[in-house]
Length: 278
Ligand code: NAP
Image (cartoon, rainbow, N blue to C red):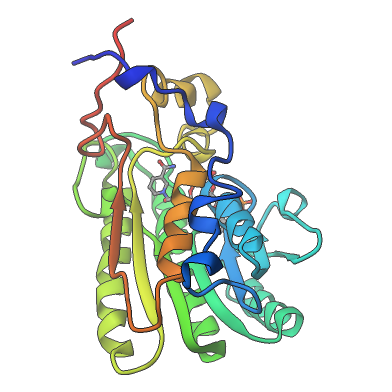
């Protein structure tokens, strides 16, 4: 199916970082909790959604410890603390959290964002190795980082898990990724039960199609294939998701946004996407 672009809207990367000086960032003027004096940890902040989230939280006043394996790609200037992190490696996670707490002094926000998909093939064509990487990163890494950070999270603090609409609706040739994101959503629901009564907020932010490094990783560096995913459609941009994260962590203390699902307008499911006519 195809359709024309709605109202001639421009692509997100042409829009740039919309809302950087108004809208959700002028929170103090609206009497909502600003992020001054707050601290945050963002995993997988070397690219895409994680980089945008770290940037947006820092713009809102937070000091942010950012982690990823490609440490050279992490923002490392005033207010940012760039630390190497491999969420699949327990020692790396322990070292990261120890250093983040030492630099920041306290933790208010944890954004569990690090994640990936490998391949787009029928399940039986996958490999043990790829499955282990996806589950280790998306599920066990997220659990590990949550367990390590939780004791340091202050009253009123917040855990945000970046899930996916793949964790809500299965689609073909993505069984392990879909399974991993269903697991993240199940874990988030269960952790909410365990945290009930404690002053810690918990949210799953579940994006649809976001233009990031995700498809390049999924297609193992095949940039042509990756580009096709975002062709003739106006996908979400990492900044759109960052604004969602900022929204959920700046609600009044008595409010918990449990789930936030956000898709491109031209998308109703992981694979039902209306593209422009060629
Ligand atoms: P991306 O641009 O490829 O970013 C992924 C980030 O995860 C990178 O910073 C990467 O850093 C990090 N990462 C991967 N493995 C890691 C590990 N073992 N330890 C630490 N960091 C690791 O893709 P993205 O779209 O921003 O993805 C971010 C999250 O959004 C993922 O959880 C993804 O599942 C989710 N999501 C994406 C989409 C989408 O359409 N793009 C939709 C829904 C949900 P290094 O490689 O430097 O370690």
